[in-house]
Amino acid sequence: MILGSIRLAGYTITAIDGGGCRMDGGAVFGVVPKPLWSVLTPADDKNRVRLSFFSLLVQDGTHSIVIEGGSAVHLPPKIAEYHCADSSSLVATLEKLGVPAGEVGFFIPTHLHFDHVGGAVEGPDGPTFPNAAYLVQRAELEEARDPMPVNRNAYQPGDIEPLENARLQILDGDEEILPGLKVQKTGGHSVGHQSVQIGTGAERLVFAGDLIPTSEHISPRWMCAFDIDPAETYQRKVDMLDRAACEGSLIAAGHGGANPIFCLERSERGRFEGVRVPSISSCPG
Image (cartoon, rainbow, N blue to C red; front, side, top):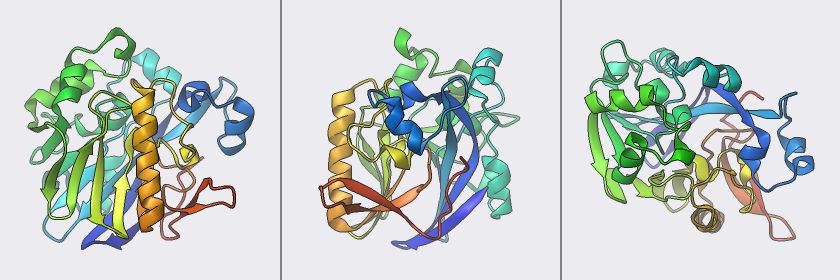
């Protein structure tokens, strides 16, 4: 589903909802009491909330960059059933936008959990984007290859093994990929989590990944229970929100939400409030 597009810093940025899955609301919202988060994100009868497979197509007239890949059909049946996981429709949506998989030059997942990379590794003969550089932090790749027990369900072998046949570009921290487009290693949610930044100043958008999983997670203390380093998530998130509020720049949430790309205002009590960019529709509820 094409949610809309914006023009920023010489790039056209198109927002895509490529399907979704369901995860336990308590895990998604951590220490936040259910009476608070369920007002914004209602849960089903199994206490699960919907998370979109939210991706961006970023184009400058020469390059096509895809940020995030959603999930895949090869999930183990029990995991797919519990999460009600869709197979990512990212590739079909890119084709509607006139971008065949073979024309994608860069694929940038914020991290390698199944709901962020699966749709980019399920091609018939290898990775979905055969000519793309796959940009991954070294720490994230090493953890995905041999995850800690607490992470084993997040990293699926069917997602990670095909990466060995991709054009991996392994990063060790922050790096500029193209003029005005760079990745920043953040950690927090996973050991090698990274954000993606496009432009500078007021002409700037940060794809936050799971530091800000949905637009309903704007409050700094609204974090996932399964963040590997909550203190790092909190600090990185506060820095990201403060800067965006001061600059007037934009943030894209890792799984979209009601305001998948938003700017920030502060309430009279000093709290952050997100304002949806009008040209980008809300993700399905």
